[in-house]
Image (tube, rainbow, N blue to C red; front, top):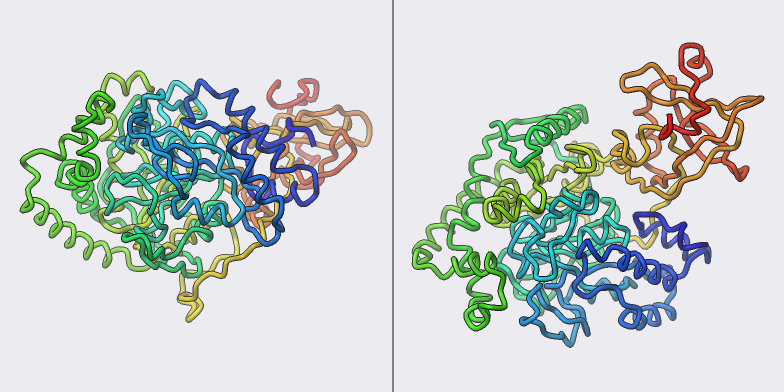
Length: 596
C-alpha cells in the first residue's frame, strides 16, 4: 500500500485492519507521520517533533507482541509537553524549565503498555496558562482548517496534530477547558474524564487539585478506547480516584440554559445560529428537554481566575517564575503572578470553597440522571485579533468551560457542524463525576450511533463496570458524490456518524449526474445501461453500526445502493432513482459535483 493512500485523518480501527492484512506496518505509518509533520512545520504543532530515532525503540518493542493482545498496538499518539514521556524533555513550553524524566507519566505508561506509540511532544500555551494557543515561545499553533485563526489552548498542538492526520489521538490537559476548546475549534472530540479518574502523576501542575489529563480524537469511539486503557486508581498519585465506568446509556433529561447565551468575536452571529441549529437538532432526539437557570455555573466559572484558585498556580510555579522571570512570556507571568496578590488570603480561599460546596450540592441535585448542554466556545478570533487583546479574548474562550472542574463534573466536547466555512462549531455535554456513562450515551445518540439503552432504568446492568474489549470497530466504505463531500455543508453528517475521509476516485464510465431541483441543489447519480461517464467521488470509511442511522437521513429520490468504481469493484454509495431525471438538469459533462 502506498503512503499516499493513508487517509487524511487517521483511525485506530482502520490502521489495525491494515496491520492485520499486511497492507501497512507501523514503521511505514511512522515515516508518513514524520513526512506530514515536516510538511506542516509552519503550523507550530510540535516542540519535540516526530523523530524516527526516538520512536524506533517503541516499534521494536511491539514487534515482539501479538496485535490481538494489545488494544492499541501500533497506534501513534501525541503528548502535550507538560506530560512526562521517558527520555523526552518536558518543557511546558518554557525551555529554561526543561527536564528529562526518567519514567513515563502514569497515563503514558498505561498507553504504551497497551501497545501505543508516542511520537512526539506537542506545543501548548506556556505552563498550560491559556485557552487560545498563541502563548508559546515556539510560535502560535495555527488552526488546522484555517491557519489565520487560533487553534485554542492550552492543548493546542495536541488537537492540531490529530486534525492534521499526524496521530490517531493525543493527550492534553484540562484545568479550565484546555481539553475541550481546541477540540471545538479543530472539529474533534475532546473527552475530559472526572477529576482523578485518569491519574495525573507525571503532569506539570497548573492547578493540581483541578487538573485532568484528556484525549483528542476524530471519533467518540476512539476517545473511549483510550479511556478504557488509562482509567483507574494509581496508588502512587495523591489525586487519583477510583471512578469505574458504568454501562453507557442515555440520560433521562437534557438540560439547556434558560437564559439567552452570549457570543463573541468576528463570527458572533454565525456562532449564535450554529448554537440554535444544534439545539433544534437535539430537541428531535426524543429525550425530554428542561430549561434551567445556569447562573451558578457562570458564577463558579468566575471563581477560577477571579478568585483564589489562581493562587494554586502560583503555589506550583511561583518559585520558578521569581527566579526566571525573563524566561516566562509576559502574559503568562502576569497571570501567574496575579496568584501572589494580597487579596488571595486564607479567608478568601475558604469563602470560595464554601460557595463552591453549595454549588456542587445544587449541581448534584440538578444533574441527577441528566446531561447539561452548552456551546464549547461562543466564538473565535484570528491570531492577529488575539494579539491585540490577549487577556480579554482568552477570558471569553473560557466562558462555557471554566466551571467544569471546580464543580467536579465530567465533560465531552463533540463537533456540531460549522459556524462559518472551515470554522467548526462544537457543543459540550456535562455530567456528574459518577455519570460519565450518560455522557457517552448521549454523545453516541447525538452523533448517530445505535444500539444504546433507553433512558428507562435497566436494573443491575447499569452499575456493572464495562468489560475492556480488545475488538476494534468495523468500518465500511461509502461513496459520496455531492453535499457530503469534504468542505460541503453535509460533511458534518459524515463525521457526526464517525466516518473519516479515505481517498478520491471515480465511478465506472457508465453514470449520469443530474442536478436536482432542491434547496440547496443536490446531485443525483444514475447508472445507465448505455452511455454515461466516469464521475468524481470521495470514498469515506464509516462504522458499520452507523450506516442505518445515516441512511435514514437521506431524502428521496436519493438513497444508498451499490456504486461501481473505475476499477470494477462495487461499494455502498449515493444513488438516485431514475424518475428524478425527467425534471433535472443533466450535468454529466462536468465530471463531478465540484466542477458543475
